Amino acid sequence: MAAPAEMTSRDISGKFVMNKSLSGKTDEILRLQGVSWLTRKAISVAVINLSIKHYTDDNGVEHIDIDQTLSGGIPGTAEYRTFDGTERTNEDHVFGPVLSKSMRVPLGEIETNWLKQDWMDESFVDEGVIATTAKSDTGKSGKTWYSEQVWGFEQVDGTKRYARHVFFKGPQGEEINVRLVYDYQGPQQ
Image (cartoon, rainbow, N blue to C red; front, side):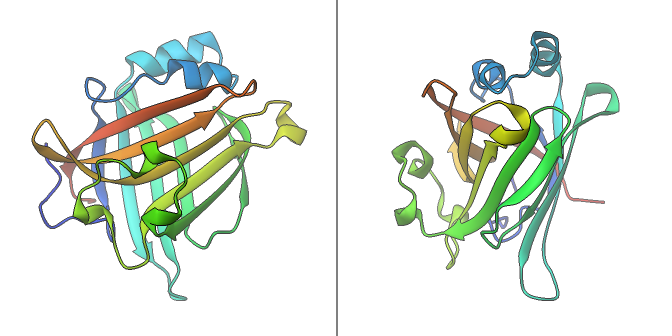
């Protein structure tokens, strides 16, 4: 289902499901992150649902909290993003120890061309686009990888959809670009 016409990156609160037929393949990224073959196969066949709560706290700091569930109600990765540019640690049950940060940045400050392409105007606000980085906490995990994402809205097959552009760099310098596309399922309840 199309994202509502009035939805912008100022508030992406809602329920979404990954559209796997429109999204790129993530298996190689997951493999390079050290995710087991069995877990990758389970992810590849699962329906991935996102429940997104987007808000500003009492101090004026933007937050996006995402609870992910897989088919059958299996908990996926939770993302609790604070958009202040501070690097935070997280112990993720799929990816292990991760360092991440989230911020708004002007699109012109994004260096990777792939991350800047095809966004609708709804993806931009005065403070810029939604941008996140994540990397392995190599000292704790023994793994080395890095990921940048820009989130927003695109016209995909003639329909406004929530999307993420992902730039991934693996342990041997492998570079992968992938787009994740989500169908809107309705408002938060």
